[in-house]
Image (cartoon, rainbow, N blue to C red; front, side):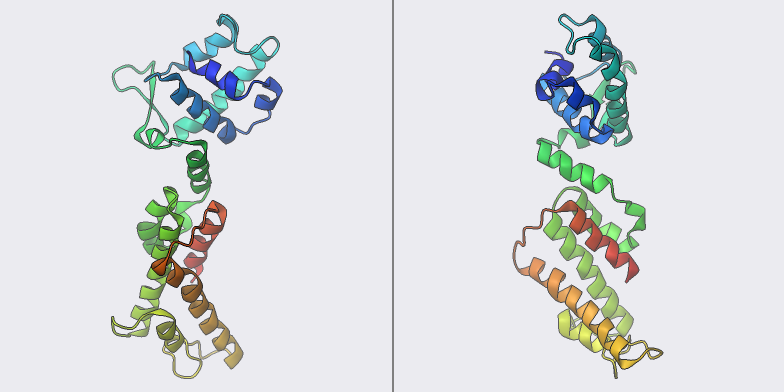
Length: 232
C-alpha cells in the first residue's frame, strides 16, 4: 500500500490533518513511510495520488487542500535530514540513517523536541559531551555529562587537585571568605548565594545521575538544564 493511504489511516479526518503544524505532520508522514514497507518514495507520485488515486485518499475538496500541507511536512523531513535524495536517482528519496533509527512516535517526539533547541547556544564543552546523549533521548546521561563538565570547569578554575570533586569542592571554590572563585566585589550574601547555586546544581543534578537512573523524560526540562550551563 502507498504511504499516503497509511497516512489516511493515521489521520482519517482531513480537517484534523489540515490544522497540524509541519513538524507534527512530519512525524505521521514518517510513520506512514515505515508502515508502507517501501524503500524509496516519490514526492511527485504521492502528490499525484490525491487527485488520481483509486480511490483518492481524501475526497473533494480536500484532495486539493492537503497536498500543500503534505509538502510542508515533507520539507521539514528534508531539512532535518530524515529524508534524503537517492544518490543514483534524484527523482526518488530515501529514509536517512537517522530516520531509520526512529522506530516509534515517542522516539520521534524526543527527536523533534531536541531539534527545536539551538545547539549553537550551548557551551562548547557541554555541546561536545552532552548533546549526543540529549539528541538520542538519553536524558539522564546528558544531564550527568553536562554537570560533570561544570564540575571540571570549577575545579580547573579554582586550581584544585584532580581528586577534589562534588559538592564539598564546589563550596570550597566559592566560599565567601576563602574561595578562589568568590567574587570580592559583591557582598557576603551574594557570594553565599553563588556558592549555593553551584553546589546545589551539582548536588541536585550531577550526583543523582551518577548513582542511579533518575528517569527524566521531559525534553524541554532537560534542554533548559543544558542551556543554563551556558551562562555559568
